[in-house]
Length: 92
Image (tube, rainbow, N blue to C red):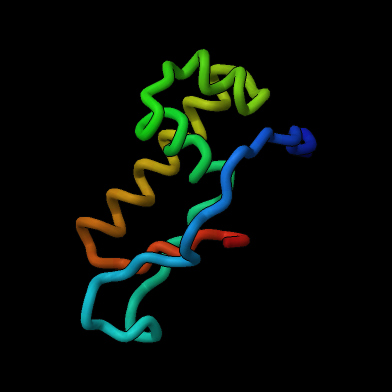
């Protein structure tokens, strides 16, 4: 049985609900869902340039948990950019 998910501190909302390649209808694209916690991790690590330790403290999770979240987020974004998938932001 998995442990219950700990509440994560999120400080931002997405400006848009999805990103997709130009000129291709959304219904023709495979979709990859980016969780809000993954978006926050990307913002803290890549936009603000915080270390994993500082970003983890802001999200109120362990450094290891933050590392796992940012790894998943970067993999999803890379898949969308390289393979031309639509990136759908959950709850945006």
